[in-house]
Amino acid sequence: MTKNLWTQQEHPIVEWKASLDVLGPEPESIARVLLQVASVGRQASLVLLDDGLADQLDAAIASCKTFRIGFGGPQSSCAAELCWYDGTDEITCGVVDDLGEVLADLPMGEDKINAGYRELGRPPVLVTGSTLSYRDNRWAAGLGGVNLRIQLCSDIWMPYVRGFAHPSRRDDLFFDNTELASRNTPRLNSFLAHVAALMRALGTELVQTEKEAGYILDYQPWVHDTGIALGGPVPNVAPPELVGVEWPLSYRED
Image (cartoon, rainbow, N blue to C red):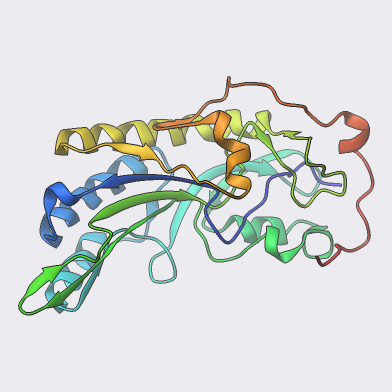
């Protein structure tokens, strides 16, 4: 068994968004904001980037082609200091750039956790947004305007998780993840609060993006505009006899 009942998925589980239309499609101004976001992320040990972000942004602007708002991803590693359970179900902490790899490296990871729940290639905290294009000698945004997005593709931050990979998973049950959330999420909340303050100083707001469909709705009771509540409502939590069942020898492909 594993006490890691959180998952890493392909699409965001939670997202916060801020409109940067107040800056217009001006990559120089947006780059300054991104450097500020990276700075507060580094202070929280949640946005640990490769060196040279300023140079990367300057190069994108000078190219007069496209300017992608955000950082992290295939071209720029973005790591965070996190805690999880090791192969003996003891808490361990370290710098992580891919939570999917953490799950895959567990003794049972590749055999018992469906690949869709240990998705590879996403940083713990993804800062992304609109892409500006350069045409007719000027920068232009798409129909959606100029936006900054902060996304989480893992529910490791949630006090209670659905346990999507767990053999006892039921639609009416959550699994207790408060031990890990209490170690990881306060720094996430501090980061988001600082980003929200930066946005207000610009004349805009950081808000949670609410989805109308999908499992994201399961986590709405704990998510707000500047973080994830650790003291929110207590759901129907799986009892120990369900949590501790033996996992099958291999996962079932749905």
